[in-house]
Image (cartoon, rainbow, N blue to C red; front, side):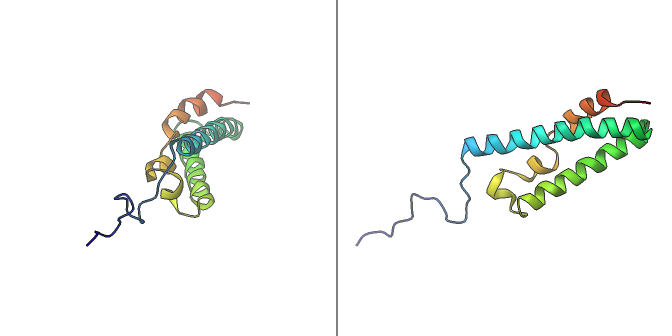
Length: 106
């Protein structure tokens, strides 16, 4: 009697991510966060947000960006990324330097 086929030992519930697609998605997050960091630094400088207020403004912009990415992915993170960290914190800390150097004071 033959054993039932298991499909190569891979469960149907486990999503398969192609490395090229994952790399492209992570690059998209990085570039969008870099762009938002520059824009938020300029806006914070124009509005006069400095110190703690500027940092809080930056974090709010990054939270809105994360929410936008979640909505774009229709809250199906594991279809496009390997972990939640990619959406929530990928590029946030690197963007702090961009935001800080992009601040303009009038």
